[in-house]
Amino acid sequence: MNLCPGNDCTPGKAGCSCQRRTIAVLVCQKGAVIALVTLFLPVAVLSLGIVADLGVVFAARRLAQAACDLGALAGCQELDWDLLAQGTVLIDEDRGRARAIEYTRRNLESMENLFSEVSIAASVDNSSKDAPRVVVEAEVVVHAYFLRWIPGLHRGISLAVMSESSVVERTKWD
Image (tube, rainbow, N blue to C red):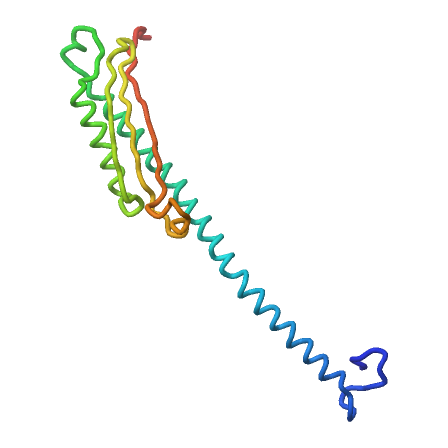
């Protein structure tokens, strides 16, 4: 088999240089692959890291939203029973606010390794006599491992979620 087309040289024949040239080309190609891997491996690792960080951020937002939802529902259960006996549906403001914050905080405690800062605020709005409501707002900062190298994200990624729940008076009983 002639490795050098157009040459009257067969491999193993004395003075044949085509075998040396083929080996030199293969060595050069191996060096090119190492150079490409060296250049693109950090880019690939950084890309995977950013995707992983964004996945953590989306999961953390979902968990924080669920905690706020549970807190708002818990706050709505703190009705003023004396007024309810008279036929007025209102939420006890102090107990409703405290219960909403307590439940939200409890649900976020299990994820403390995910968040670096947590602030929770709750309010009770009895101004609408038909549907008193509880609003829970939480602000959390999610740890970022790869994204922290981007300017402005060294503390983490801030998320704000809000949930609202209301008590509706049932007027018709079937």
